[in-house]
Amino acid sequence: MNANQPFQQDSLCPHDRRVSCANCRLNSICLPISLHIEDIDKLNQIIQRGKPLQKGDYLYRANDPFDSVFAVRSGAVKALTISDKGEEQVTGFYLPGEVVGLDGISENRYTNSVIALETSSICEIPFHRMEELSLKIPNLQRHFFQLMSREITQDQQMIILLSKSSAEERIASLLLSISNRNNRRQLSATAFRLPMSRTDIGNFLGLTIETVSRIFSRLQQQQIIEADKKEIRIINIEELHKTANGGDACHS
Image 1 (cartoon, helix red, strand yellow):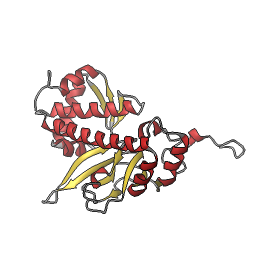
Image 2: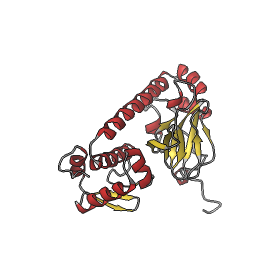
Image 3: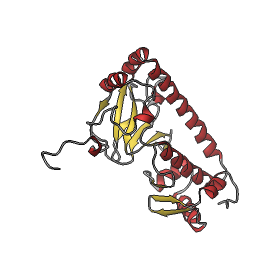
Image 4: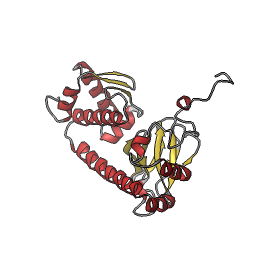
């Protein structure tokens, strides 16, 4: 960029710490629409933006003291728990505009560990400051309750997802979930990149990596999706819905 050329906000990298709540492309998701600009400035003052996490970095670990909730600004993270046998269990994937850390509220400690799936920028919101600010900005408090409600709903959807009897239903449901979440971020609902590996998908859905790969291949053969490594294009979303609901799906 020419030194005399005026700086353009839109040129900011999504990982750039100079991004504020006022100019963030995700503020329509993270913030209440009715929040006034002076209230956004107050919120922006308490949000901490550290350097981006690299793939494999921990945002926090299970049993760490709870002190903040976190909004994913770019990239993606996964939440996981470790069983008594030391086995890792993926419990969720979080995309830009989504909030993690709510699991720490009830017992003042995080129950999951959260790890970056790729280079990811995170907004840290100290919880005690959020409580103080919510008392001054009722719309913010209401929005935070909505975030908690959304988290509960996602947990319920995960239970339903894992209760599905076939591998096809589980994978189709996961693809539709990512499609819907992309659409909510005003991104393409039919062409997107999966931030997680096939291994993570299998771990999350209770499937082997071989089964995951076989189902992706089968969905391609049925001309429901196209898959090139992590790049996904949904060709026939109606059939994908049918597969997710058990209609015309071949069982493994």
